[in-house]
Length: 317
Length: 281
Image (cartoon, rainbow over all chains, first blue to last red; front, side, top):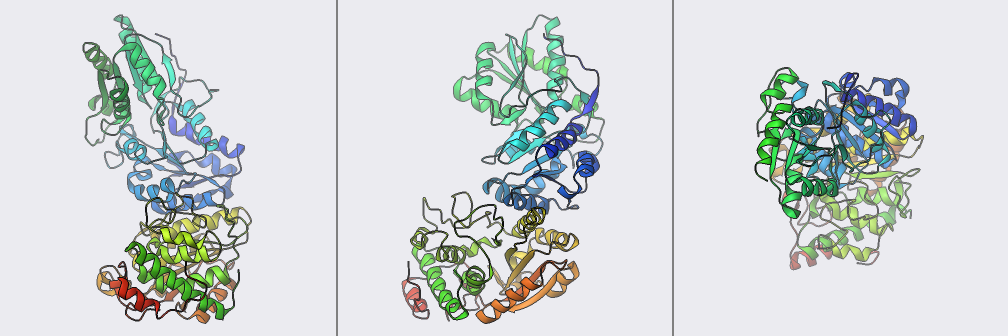
């Protein structure tokens, strides 16, 4: 097992804030919109640098998505910012018609995704957003794993033409990917090469997969871990190659088991190379209030759940 | 192509014929609102807007238009074709398989002149405001126009947009509401009354005007007046009274023709009331 260490923990939303500022410096067409959550989305640095390229829309997400679509018509590259719930479920039809169907170059940037926003509870903890977004034709769906990767992804989507859903979170988590990484949309990232099982993880669950891999290594199980930061378009080649090599698969995500990464991988594998699979995901339920780590444990999303899933799936080979 | 008021009226007659024939041809679509808004569309595309039928999506340096109540697509398509965005013969393909002339307007099939999909109601004002903001950022002094149905104002997103535009001084936008008082299930006053739209938009901070949307001279004057009111810190709203089904006596003023196609006999009767002026497709 390759050794991963970290010197600090940071929130992925701060990676977004830093990436937005960098993207803004690189391209003057980059503009930002926010629905009354500037602090939560870490947009203040962008606003300080480019006050004329920031639009405060108030608590009106539908209008924000529509205006973003309109801004693209004048050649702008709008980044919208609010919580994941209000970025997707609340404005699904606006995204569907005015952005996706209209093929507008809007970047929908969503913080506080999943359970780990914690104490606010289920009204804010969307666990269905990946599914909602990946079902839209032409939508790219990205869920990076740490601060550095989120920053790199934010810069990369500014250079990519087309609608994108970028999902990130609130809690501080280990920063373990390189600061100078090149983010390639749709290209899976090999975290650890192994032979016994393929673990495909996205977002905060990539670090949990690494912790699980270390525990399993002590028991002589050699795991392959792949970071699927881009859920759509899925890196099919990487997934198929790994699944063929190891013969069994575990998927890990902070999302409902329906509609998420696991479902995309199951569909791919069942079409090409049926493979035993286990799903580390929320089992079709809403979340609740609590500390992030308490929630991850209660809803079965921590490294011990990944260890259990690996052992279970290996018996089914 | 810019027309004088007399030719605008002749063009409106042709566009109304196009609408009826398109809807008849596929036995589906929305003739009522299309006929009611014909004079507005003709005034806009043949007199008021500075626009380029060679069509660039970004619309830089030209006036651009957004149709929010996308179901009145027949009038939009006819006017686009008649002003040179695409061949009028293509109107024959309206609502048929493998056509760019979809039931509701879309950018998806690449039809020139369309900048956003619409049909799911209540989204166009936000899009128009976004495009107007982009023009301001680009120091582009051309204008953005948008049209909305009155029934459509029942959608809440309109009021988010209506609140945003005056607060942010989006004064390069001229919106219009087609006040025909009808929607699918009946008169708007029976379905969900809109009360005093003038007071509502004024209270939100718009510069509100009124126009008779079926009087060509009147609508041209109103749109020209609206242009002089831009650049003064407020978005402009034209509350435009129209008659659903205008131009065909048995269709006028009834919600029954909101989304119903005429049969052969009705088509003949309707066309006999409208002069063929610029040649049928």
